[in-house]
Amino acid sequence: MKKIFLPLVLLMSLLSCKNDNIHRLSDEEVLNLIFNSAQNSTIAYENLEYLTENFPKRLACYPQGIEAAKWTKQIMESINLDKVYLQEAQVMNWKRGNEEVGSILLNGEKIPVNVCALGRGISTPKNGLEAQVIEVNGLEELEKLTKDQVKGKIVFFNQAMNPTYKNPFRAYSETAGQRFIGPIKAAEYGAVGAVIRSLTTRIDEFPHTGTTRKASENETVPAVCIATKHANLLSQTLAVNPNLKFYFKTSCKNLPDTISYNAVGEITGAEFPNEFITVGGHLDSWDNSPGAHDDGGGCMQAIEVLRIFKEIGYQPKHSIRAVMFMDEEISQGGGRAYAEEAKQNGEKHILAIESDRGVTAPRGFTMDASDEVIRKLASYRALFQPYDITVFEKGYGGVDIAPLKDIGTPLLGLDVDATHYFDWHHSANDTFNQVKREEMQKGAATMAALIYLVDKYGI
Ligand SMILES: [Zn+2]
Image 1 (tube, rainbow, N blue to C red):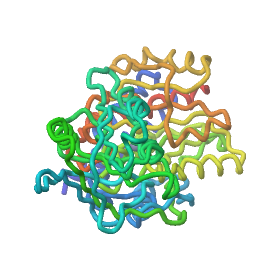
Image 2 (cartoon, helix red, strand yellow):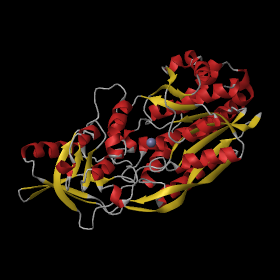
Image 3 (cartoon, helix red, strand yellow):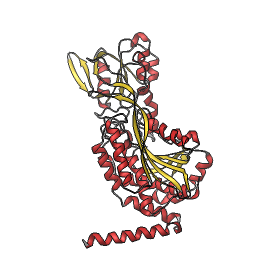
């Protein structure tokens, strides 16, 4: 009993002492408190484990997505914030249906391969789809073919992500077009289906899903992504047997839009309650995935920022909001709803930060902001040096915070070591055990530290 009681008293006195004195501490000392608070806590990490175990496959339009939002509201209520609420958002409603099947048909043999449907895509006929295959190395190569070469076939987009780039997001954006508009382009050329190489540099058996552009049934074709190992197998088998056939079956559906929810928690500002700093991630995940790195971890980091301020006793001048955006993966309804309400309420958003590149070791921030703001934020670099946070450069903010740009908000993305991000991205491989607590916590502390500085000195 004693053992529990004494440290608790000590902690309480430390907390109240910090509370009184924090405004007298130097910035170096406050940052030290922030980074220490993050590293000494296991709460966000345990919450991420609970989220991924109890609410995997939480697309915005699925019951799991809505249950996850309600649970997230509860955990924010447990840290005594000033406001916690759910915010309605209109979202696209796509359902995967039964698990997909795919196979290479060769000499009367059926070689099974791992495939999955693409979000917003259409389904195959009830009994599936079977046709010869024409392989292309991306969209440009398809455009060099004639309609006669493609007609009646399945187009196999097999452009691989370039594994040599330092920034894997560059490799992703170079190849994502084949997933996004590949099925529509294939339809244009008279194809009956499309198979798309999963967007990862890893060679494994996980199909990686993602959205494809929505189109009417006759403007697109049924499509699946295929695991990289099986994409290689298909390509090699095709090289020897160009007349082989491919079979796949999907049963996904596009339904009328539905309602889902962002979860929002706030510490109200003491001096400028109607001026906001937003920190967030997206709570929805793909329905083939626990969504640990993408982006349950980013959400738990955002809540952790508020928990850190509570623990160290920092009362911000501006209102700080943690926002769990809903529906990043399919139609970004959560981000739009949040910005709309901010506009309607005349809220001034002085800064928004998003963590959605995996919760690996943080490196700093990429900033979608004016040169003046970038210069000002980069002037804090020396304070972050002890933590090896060095990136303060112009760049991308985040998908969910992007609509806030309309009201002039500077947008920041937490920059991380994304070397392995696409190993997990949009697949069943995005599991809790791939998350390192220290790295995730350091990311939360990095955001909390910058928010502290912006809150104190303005922007
Ligand atoms: Zn994401």
